Length: 95
Image 1 (cartoon, one colour):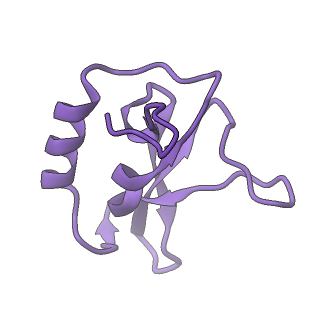
Image 2 (cartoon, rainbow, N blue to C red):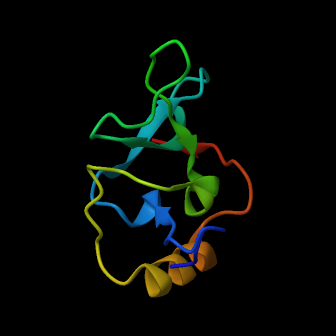
């Protein structure tokens, strides 16, 4: 993990057990995008709707504190592997 400016460790959402991959229809028949959501309900928009993030950006999502955070292992190794395997741009997948 890396540190915030105040010396506390950043929490990487991608390393949390509540970070889930979901399919979102693209509007083109049997195609979809991959997105990520927090199944603990911690990602909200200003108006209270659930926020979902693009799959290829999930490794950058951090928070300073989360009472639902449950790490899935060594964050440094996991994030290194994740960044290596994530697509570099939004991709459309077919069923």
